[in-house]
Image (tube, rainbow, N blue to C red; front, side, top):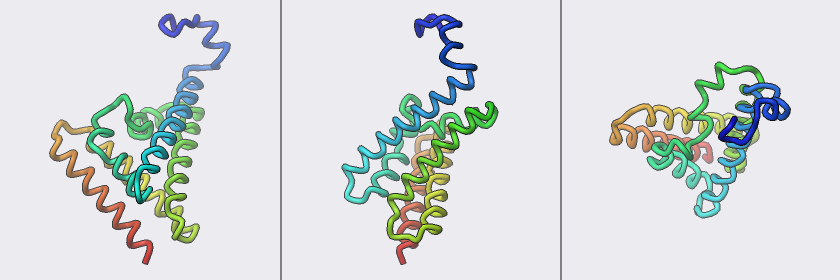
Length: 158
């Protein structure tokens, strides 16, 4: 509190609990990530490929300071109160909805299902890759996920 320039009273005037603060931090992190992903996509000829390539990169994997909220806090969010889990879920809905928008060629039901599979694959791959000190293995996990996602998206077009 002292480092943030707040007193305990000032904190609790703004937030009813630590979990409310964590929930707000989750929302802000999700918003910041969405802005970053959109900026990267604008640079790419294929926005989905741009997102997948940026997200499943060793740079994203090995930089915990800029890593994805979902990878970083999934285990912790599951053990927090409903305010944190709700904020986490809102962020995931936003992330998968963002991916859905990159799949306009699919019908709504298939687009939703495919976006959820892509989001889960991306988050899982980075989580696994971050858990190892073996850069070659981590890079292989990320590459396999990239290839699988891009193949899934291509298969859905037929």
